[in-house]
Amino acid sequence: MTSISDTLKARARKAEKEQSDKEKAFKKLLDEVHYNHDESLQAQQDQYDAELAELLKFKKELVRDYDRLTVKYHTACAQVEDQNEKINDLDAKLSEYTEVLDHIKAPDGPIYIHNQRQDIVKDLKRDAN
Image 1: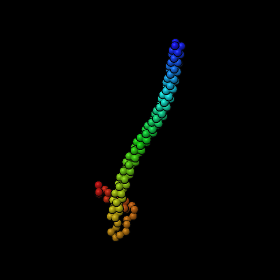
Image 2: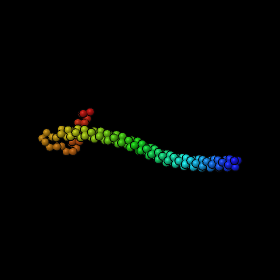
Image 3: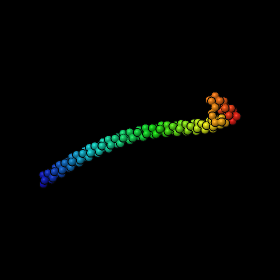
Image 4: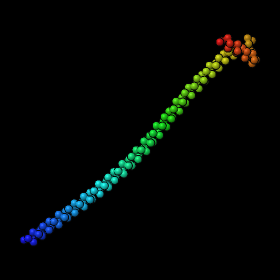
């Protein structure tokens, strides 16, 4: 009976050892799977971080370009406004000169010569001031 008991104990030890070896192999495999999964997640995170950094850089460039173009736009608007003021001033002067030219016609209809007109314009300007 001792031999049967010893045989059963030996089989039990062998089964425990096999179970222990299987558990160790499973644990090792599980650790490898976790390690590979962690590496995969880290690679995905690195790729995400790189893409995010690139997008942030692109966004900064867009903001910088927008700011630069906004400044150019406002400068151009100011220049257009100044040009419009100059045009309006010149238009007003032109209408003044046209009015003056209408007044320098001779009573009998002919227009004075250029020097006479210049003298009359100077006199009218002096009188206006």
